[in-house]
Length: 241
Image 1 (tube, rainbow, N blue to C red):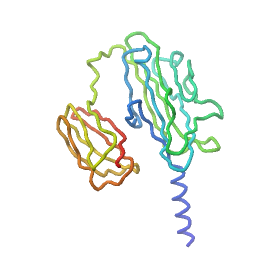
Image 2 (cartoon, one colour):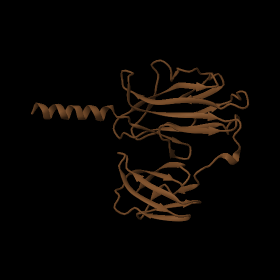
Image 3 (cartoon, rainbow, N blue to C red):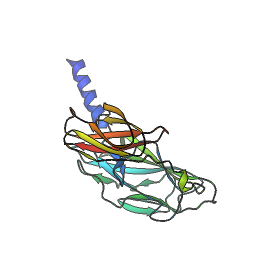
Image 4 (cartoon, rainbow, N blue to C red):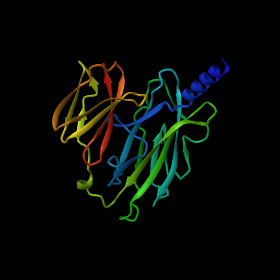
């Protein structure tokens, strides 16, 4: 009985320590840990990356912070990070919001619009500039919990518009009548995951308007990962009704 009780307590503790947030861009695309965002301009709003933090818990408020973890060929003096409030001229090692402050998100909600990362540092005109930011959750005592999510903001002054190799696909985010519609300009591998990270469906699709049968999936939120033949990927949140 004691061993069983200990196992249950450890299981509950593990659940409590799990991160309860996701990160997405302005188009609703989910951002994976280690994502690199590349820009070839330093003008606003073209060089601004807007983001939203989602609370995936249905019962608990979460408290979020961002650490300016590192920088290459820059010191942060011309970097702006808006998270709750806007901070300019930030430095490596700085945590925002500062001190005991944090951004609190209600269950099932997301941060409002206006949060973004923006670089206006031109550097020397040839070398790449990089900033690394770590999003993480804290408990009521201010201690970090769960798994963080790291994003790299990169400015490449020599990168031309033709060098961006985007994955060109659009998904209708709400699935009705068990059909998910994808419009794509290229062949893709489509993987569908539930919020526990379990793959529940996988299919290869061709070019044009494609319809994927989602029969058998329960009504909830899923993550759809698209991969093309060039190694590019995109993750999008959908709702099955």
